[in-house]
Length: 146
Image 1 (cartoon, rainbow, N blue to C red):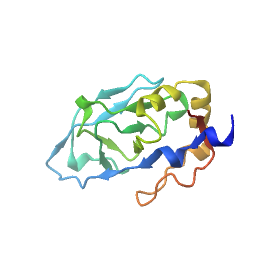
Image 2: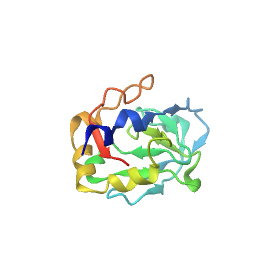
Image 3: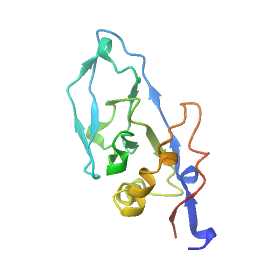
Image 4: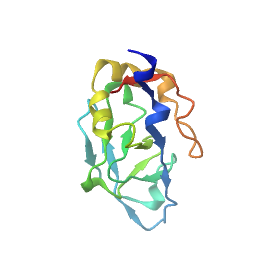
């Protein structure tokens, strides 16, 4: 691979955390992520008074979401239309994908490969920046494109 045919996570992903301040009596439908790239599942709704300490974040169709606890085993998914507007805890960082650089479906499948899983299992790739930053610090080659 030549350097000109490589792209980085910073070129492709932008952390997009839509934090919600929970209303104690309101109900929030929660989303989970299966391991091994098997997608999302719907959990029981929670009341705002029971919101996770890690925060409550809303997801949108097309987001790439990963579970940082189980990322090493491919707990990565793309939010589909049925999941739009559901919620995840702060342990599930949500990213938007730059459509000029990559198709989100490609990343979904890439993170099912050995190379993708190896990256997810490397601590520096699991560093989740604060909501005010993106993944710009991760400038190592991600995958060959073009």
